[in-house]
Image (cartoon, rainbow, N blue to C red; front, side, top):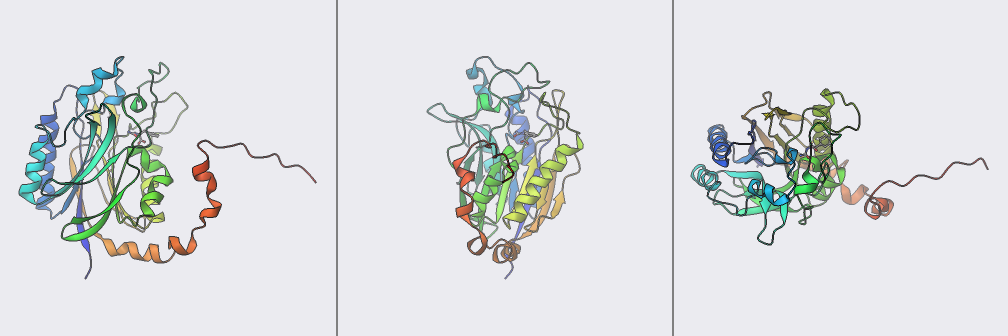
Amino acid sequence: MRRILPVAAAQLGPIQRDEGRDVAVARLVAMMERAHARGAALVVFPELALTTFFPRWYHEDRAQADHWFESAMPSNATAPLFAAAKRLGLAFHLGYAERTPDGQHFNAAVLVSPDGDVMLKYRKIHLPGHAEFDPKRSVQHLEKRYFDVGDLGFPVIRAPLGGLGVNAGIMICNDRRWPESWRVLGLQGVELVMCGYNTPSTNTSAAGFEAPHLRVFHSHLSVQAGAYQNATFAVAVAKAGVEDGHELFGHSIIVNPQGEITAQATSWDDEVIVADCDLDMCRLGRTTVFAFDRHRRPEAYGRITAQVGAEAPGEWRKE
Ligand code: ING
């Protein structure tokens, strides 16, 4: 019996700085309805799906940024999302800014069952950008200012989704650019990686020119390579469009274990794309090319966990 999971990627258009959570939640619920109408059993929403991408805004006092964070999940603002999921029998993935009771701040995401149980939680580990105001930048990217490094690792859980048991894992945005994120999930037999992102469509750092078309290329390259090299499905979902004049690209995709894009968003606004994920497609890769137990050589990989930065190689000398 084929294990086919119909998955929806619900790409979210822009959220302006002064728009309340009610605006975003209403749009998320509307997309849940559309995903349900198209037969999806799971809806994947983007990173930081409840507010504008606030790490672009500098606050001298970090506490001034606390209003961007959720101190409970669900909360009154997000309750309509949980109610809709229950009514429609849908599981969903949601990215949001989490403030814990002891005052920690995380860029988090959860996988929630139709009954409202949080089946899996992840806190973003690879935080891009910088912690202090950078006058050289055209736009700030202050994730290192507002978020603590995730402390939950990269967990995978076998979750009941669409009547199937699915090995589900989560990463967030910049994590997708690091092969380590994918491999840690792959070493737990992940079959479906959910990854929300908010990615500026142009390079805002002062480090040098990057042609804009490379932004989407690098995002797709990272997700397609990660899915292929770990024989897993991947759902990469954007928050897109122009937020207070700042552009985030869309191009959300669903990728199969062969690295092929099976569905892609073509707008930079609210858009639902759906694909049938035949989970047994993972088997070919993980029993042949990427049969980790037969082919991996961890004794040769020591540098990957022993080092943080690169070390200069020795100079070649003629004997
Ligand atoms: N955004 C971007 C991302 O990793 C970025 C930041 C863009 C880093 C392009 C490097 C290159 O997609 C978030 N939110 O991580």
